[in-house]
Length: 429
Image 1 (cartoon, one colour):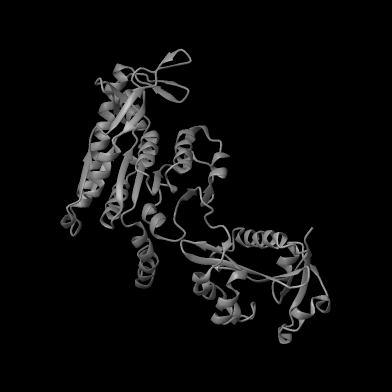
Image 2 (tube, rainbow, N blue to C red):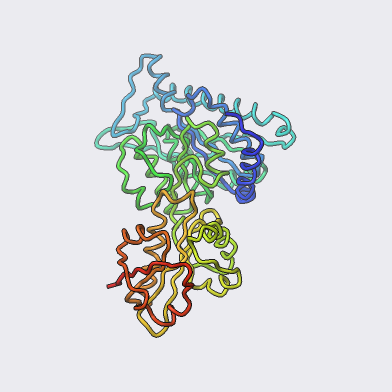
């Protein structure tokens, strides 16, 4: 469906901060052999060229498993697999080199075509490949010699860094070389993870068929990732986990069936894939003065509907120490406040709000749990709310109706009577 002018303008407005954010950042993008077989794969490489013109430093890694299998089948050579690893004998190595070489040439052709379309051609961007990977043999496992199947030993990341600084896209194939002149077939997932770690990449991105993955949420942390048991993607998930445990900030899984999925994942707030990281992304945190504008943008529509009590900017600035927020890509999408009633064991939960686009997840529950934890740490024994339209939700959280006149006098004196709020309380053991 073609974009109308309004949606196109909206996309650019949403993408603008990400364009700035990603400029000069290093992305390792790994494309599986299955993804390379898509009829629309040329669009993906056009999108990678766009990333490069927008200032991202791109290392592109490709797989070739189905391509190798096709060569083996065409030549009536039965490949052998042991514990998920190909045993690369001399013939298999020859067919692997042919398959990988053909895949690399096809990728270079797609990228060259994309990079030579005006006005990209004026940016002097190039594609560089070479023997950057040093490998060693896997050797004998359970009595089975894997012959020319290898493991990555090191990657010349200094040379890669220089090539990236000169504006090149670096292309890495799943082949490694030993100092003695041996060639080894290596896992593309391992190449991608190793390169991302050595380059301290900002993102490790796998374009991989989602049919091989279980249904995943749009966000995962490492704990959730490590709980996934899937034999067909064990290597991929292992490399992602290892990378994020070390030098890589975030990893992404993108389905090649989604046209433009790479651009949508990187340049829109909600993305089009799965994001994995090691930080408390999207988790509640203490608010600070820089959050005031974002909180106001969030709560103004709710104030207009009478759901929340109106607050001036000045009042919010004075109260900011009481607030916690949930932030997503530098935009406040949730907030709540905890007010301690001095001289009592009461605390008030107030101004709990979640942006409408993000209410289908458990963010409301998470920020409530965050406030409840803060209240316990402050020795608050009774947490109360005053609500006009959210009584059912608070009831589900365990709040019970409570007579307003039993609240501390200091809080009763400041209540706006015309709101006719209902008071509820939650004892904190």
